[in-house]
Length: 311
Image (cartoon, rainbow, N blue to C red; front, side, top):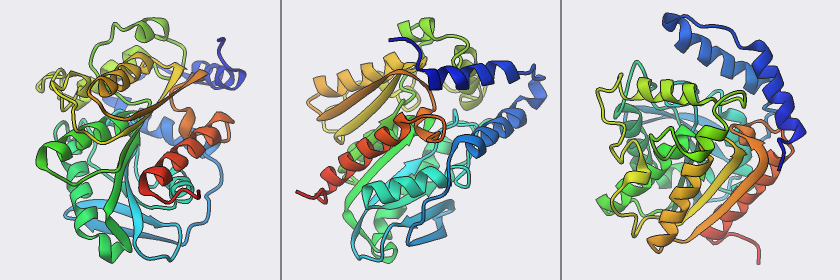
């Protein structure tokens, strides 16, 4: 279908305000630019029962409790931003929405960022925070037997890899992995990369730059499955998944290819493509009506996986 008018408006704004960046300024300017988008289109913060900053064995996390109930499920989330941009403070609005939509404690992870801290530092932080969340579930008011992971974009990449690492380590046992337009591969020649290379908020050159930052300029092999989970040799036994993609996103094809590989491996998958939409729509509810629909989809899937969906 054609580009949705709401997506077209964001793309027009983005394209009109793009400015050349000197290589030495690009990291800081990119981080600042994304913060402005969230401030403009993220919406008002939803109230939750409690918010607390904690230290997860050296990894800063922010914990959101939607209610005072005991033994709530736990949803560990990793923000997007190409492993380069984003903070738990900027992700606050989405984390609050996720807590309320899922009825779960949300542990939002402030992992280290590239290029200052390239692979595997962000991944190490995320898996450490996941293990900490399970080990400290009782003091958080959570249930260590009902845990999920998720994230958007690079956060979806980290969630997918953490789910594989958890399988290989024999735990934590995950009820669900929520992958929102995830980075799944380092192949920049897919059909969606070709169709959506320029002018649609996230551009192919940007993703290549993100990979360059994450892999320390190629020092780490981008085809390593811990960077490109689509290349994992075996997906059997990994947690059930929700995979959300957007039609006009360079990452669309790889996200759907990952969902297909999960199904082929016998993993239960709920997949939804949002036609007419672009990367980042999930986190911009003021700009995209579909953001609320996707949030409801994620919340319902989590409640179903946790056994708390009203019947």
